[in-house]
Length: 190
Image (cartoon, rainbow, N blue to C red; front, side, top):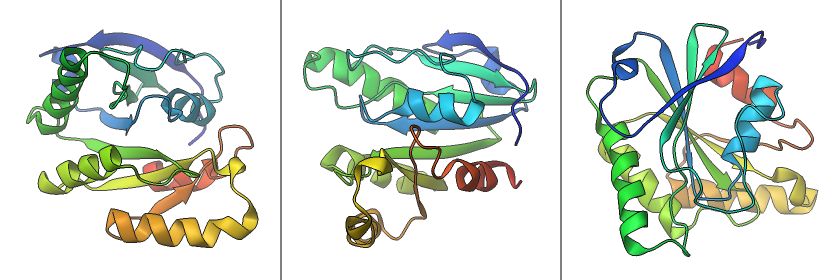
């Protein structure tokens, strides 16, 4: 998909009419500091569409970006930020679960972003369990693939596959552009 327009629409923390729209919602989920913002920015070709922060856990709402006036990219807050209080972490967890279990959303695709070098963490595996429990189809994006040596890739892919239940995994690098075409094709069929 060629991105011609991309703009921030709004952040939500509860029921909102935007959830009821018929536009496809491509939701990006992942741990704090895994590079969700970088993946979204690289897919859209915009450096600062989604603001990334050196402070993990900064996003506390569900942010909607309108792409080509017909698709929403949905940036969910990052989960698992250790320095946040238990109450803050739980609030973010509940917001993510609310979005994932919201019945209003009819047209949704999910992208789970993990760190290619670290592999799926305990929190990532918990998220995979939640996605499976609610019968959500999803794509795993192993971001920061540029940090992996070529010799590590097959081993890491096997580890991800074993831990994540053989879900499709795309190696991705927002830095080099690796995986951008493959992810775009999976999401939009072009």
